[in-house]
Length: 217
Ligand SMILES: NC(=O)c1ccc[n+]([C@@H]2O[C@H](COP(=O)([O-])OP(=O)(O)OC[C@H]3O[C@@H](n4cnc5c(N)ncnc54)[C@H](OP(=O)(O)O)[C@@H]3O)[C@@H](O)[C@H]2O)c1
Image 1 (cartoon, rainbow, N blue to C red):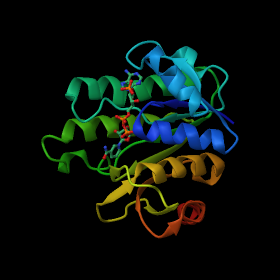
Image 2: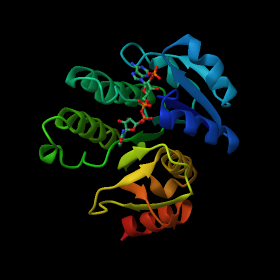
Image 3: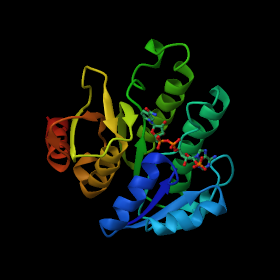
Image 4: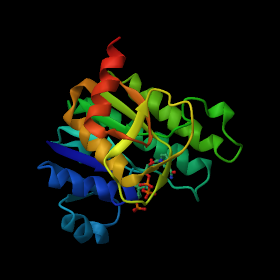
């Protein structure tokens, strides 16, 4: 599968690009700085320069799926969160629809289900995430919305806890989130699911399969 990774140079994105290549996919690594191209190629990605603040239509050409794992980052204010976390995702949804790319996976955030209860500092972020999620869910595409808890750089162990709502906060390694994203692309039963993910005890493909069965009930 040829997969556009928006945010490929990010901490999840780099792990995802490498994992996709290792799994035999063709990751198209969206970067906004040409100088990142060699690094992405070394991870197995086909570098493609596009800025989410500008035109991204060309990025979606000839891909089978899009994974959005970009973000303006914790140091940014509400404006960039609207432009990148929300607007960038929405632009890619529109581009995917226009070019007939059906599969769309977005990295959202735990807490996006209820931005009103976020701290004042986190609210613009959670609102932007929620708005992007709502746009994805209304797109008519074959979407999956993945909501991780607090991200860590710990090595992944291939085990997580997933549920529509886990009912608790916590942390999850970026490495395992990347593994979840690869597994989501491999399992079409995850289409139409929105779920939270934390470090946990469950094997990733099995956990996703169980989630899909619950979603059918
Ligand atoms: N931090 C947390 O605890 C947490 C929790 C839940 C969910 N999340 C979400 O998880 C996702 C990935 O997190 P992460 O830690 O991997 O983030 P990250 O390392 O900050 O990566 C974000 C990526 O987005 C890219 N980006 C930013 N603006 C862009 C633009 N205008 N055009 C193209 N690309 C742009 C960045 O590019 P450059 O490399 O060029 O800067 C970077 O590669 C984000 O959506 C984040 O909101 C985070």
